[in-house]
Structure formats: C-alpha cells, structure tokens
Image 1: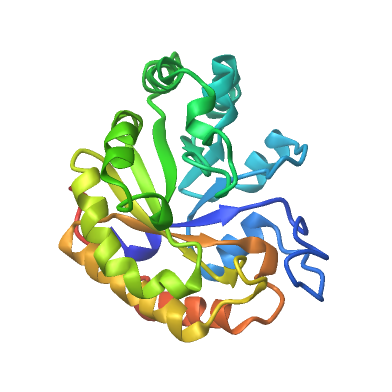
Image 2 (image 1 turned 60 degrees about the vertical axis):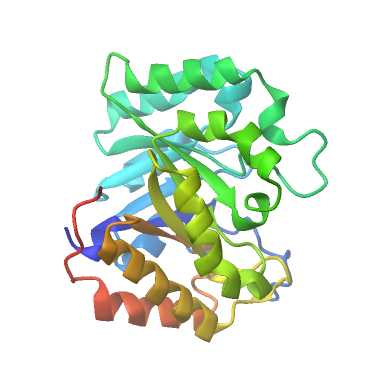
Length: 270
C-alpha cells in the first residue's frame, strides 16, 4: 500500500480555533479541503464539542478511503455508539471510531477521563462496534507520551483499557519532548503487543500557542516513516485542518514530505 493511503487527517470543524491558541488570522479550511491539500485519503472527524451535521460532513468525505468519528462519549453512554453505526450504514467509508484524549483531558483531570465510566462500558461498546448489523468497525485510542512510561503501576492499571482497542495512536503534546520519542516508542511497543499502532504529528504547537518548528516536524515524519517501513507502525495522523491555510511553514514541510514519500510502498501492517 502507498504511504499516503496510510495517512490520516485529524479533522475539526473549520474555524474552531479562530481567535484562540495565539492565532491572529482566521482559517476557513474544511477537513475535506485539507485532505486534498495534503493529498491523503483518510480523516478522523473530531467535533471538539461543537454541534455538527454529521451527514453533511460524511457527504463531503465521499472520495476518502476511510472516515472515523470521535466516540469517546459512547464509553460514558454506550447507546451513543449507535450514531457511528448509523453513519456506517449510510456511508461505506465510515470504518472507525476513535476515542480522543482517552486517558486524560489534561493534567488537571480529576479523576482521569478513563476512570469516569466502568471498564465494562468500553468492552461493551467495542464489542458492538465489532459485531453489528452493518460491518465491523475499528476502535482506536489517543495516548500521549507524557501519560505512559512514567509510573509502572499506573501503566499496569491502564493496561486492561489499552488491551480493549484495535489500535492506539501515540502523540507527543510538548515540542520539548519530541527528542524523547524514540525512547517512548520502545516503551509504547511493549505496552501494545497486540494493538495496531499509528503516530500523531502536530503541525501547530498547541502547548505553546505558536506554530510548530518545521525542522522538528520533518524529524518526526522521518522517524515515523522508518518505523512504518519496519512494520512497527502503520500510519501517521496529521493535526489539523484548522491552521492549514494560514501559510505556516510546518504545513509546507508536511506537504513537501508527502510529495517526496507519499507514493512509496510501505509493508502490510503486522
């Protein structure tokens, strides 16, 4: 499969960060437009608490290979997974449910998000995703590098939650921690022996409310590609459409990198 076919956009409602996070200009780029801009064929759609018309977005995604929707709230209210199943019934490319910020919303969460519902809810929801009247839907979870490999007991306590998912996306929130990614990935592999794996790559530094450093973006993409070629991970998730039209250098780097490598073959996922 081509590398670009293993890449995803982390999509948000267009303009949702306008006037926030240090942005001085307004963005109008939609998730579908950003997929075209990056020349990738998959997106996760994460509404960020905004009320969105799921059907209209799904219609805009008609040409994409894969579409996923955030369904964290289904872990709290399992019946909400029916929204994803209904999407899949009407749109053949809706294949995935993603559980955003699964372990914590931020460092101040009390208790952590995943402790706000019974673990059986999670297994019930993912069981319904796997076995429903439409087709098997994949389950993916977001996990930040700052939230594992710090306390062994905490990792052991969290393991049953990780084991529930088909795949886990490893993200690094703080740019200053990017040099730790190789070390963190070795830990991540040990924690995910049965899970599929992807990497998340921020093209804007939300931690410091400023543009991402282009050189660090390229370093990440090169490292992630090496792991994909080894078969240790299967894809990259680019964050996000909501700054992609603001002439930021990190997006230029991502586009150039995809132009250079997007049509290269990568091994079948393990």
